[in-house]
Image (tube, rainbow, N blue to C red; front, side):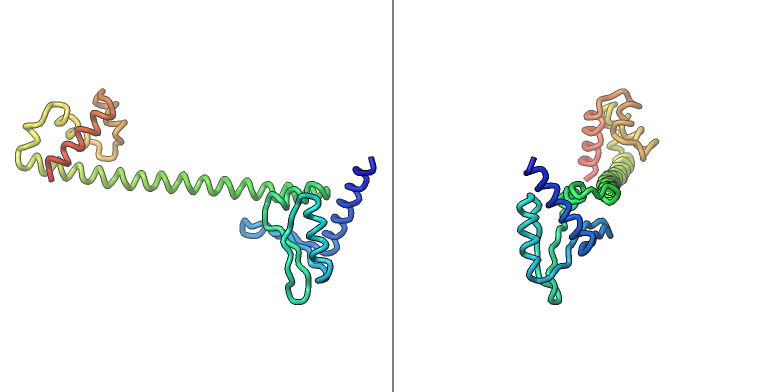
Length: 186
């Protein structure tokens, strides 16, 4: 019981220190919590936080001691322990929003790169088909290669899977036929 009471007292003291000397910034997706204290108190406060398994950095800034956390996890734990529920919810909402934005950007970038590669490949394939038809070599190709060439011409935007479904072929057969057309045209 005494340990629990001592813990509650420590967290109450820290809550008071934060209310009196602390600030929390959640700007631009960055989390930053700091205490502005006397130069003598900064290492003492950092040591107390380390005892509570929340190690913080400290330094001197314009003759004042500054104890900081920049880790969202450490800030979240601190806010939870001092009972700052509203601030904690805001922090977590921003972290979730930032993670979702990051994931969405990754997906969009990957899709954009895939689309650019597909468009470039379709362009190369159409040029190869035109060259092979112009010199009569397309007509000499196997039926599957000719069918893939015709399907690519009719639907240049189609994916390999779309072409395969349309021609009732395996995707790999369509890919091999298109690679063959490009090789022959070189």
